[in-house]
Length: 187
Ligand SMILES: Cc1cc2nc3c(=O)[nH]c(=O)nc-3n(C[C@H](O)[C@H](O)[C@H](O)COP(=O)(O)O)c2cc1C
Image (cartoon, rainbow, N blue to C red):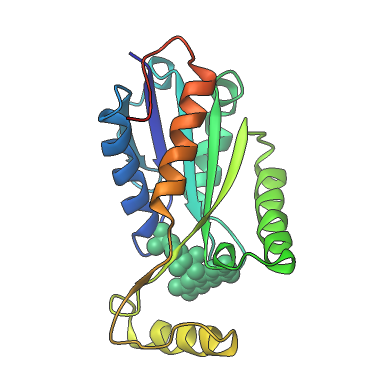
């Protein structure tokens, strides 16, 4: 059975939710998957047991998590010899116009340039607004930025923009493409 590791970085927990959901999804499609938080790594981590990797991070003020960058740099050797998928979670990815998509790709390129890593594939993923969980200051800052962009500003609730169906299909296609002999199919 194909064994995948999902290593993620998160600030407010949405990328953790994505990682956990993908673990459940892959497990239900005969792919053994586990997730780890790059900011809270186990003491002994043997990456050689995994056939492929999904690395996921969210964008804050134009940058992905440092812990994710450290993880990538520390494991560059194995990551360059296994199929890898990079998921970049952001609010910019919610907007499908050319200008925003260019911005998303530039942010991904910047991160990959900084880490010196070339994943087999990269995918922008729509993030979430977690107004309820933000502290007062962050809630006001986010509301003001989002208001300026004409987005959702009811701070009494959260907004989740992730297209789960598209994401799960993409991830399964990735696994099937790289591990074609394994039984991993969309039911
Ligand atoms: C303080 C803050 C700064 C953010 N900066 C950006 C940004 O520069 N670009 C962007 O597209 N999204 C930005 N976002 C949106 C996050 O990428 C989005 O909320 C994502 O779902 C967060 O994922 P996480 O909960 O895993 O950290 C920001 C969010 C917060 C709270």
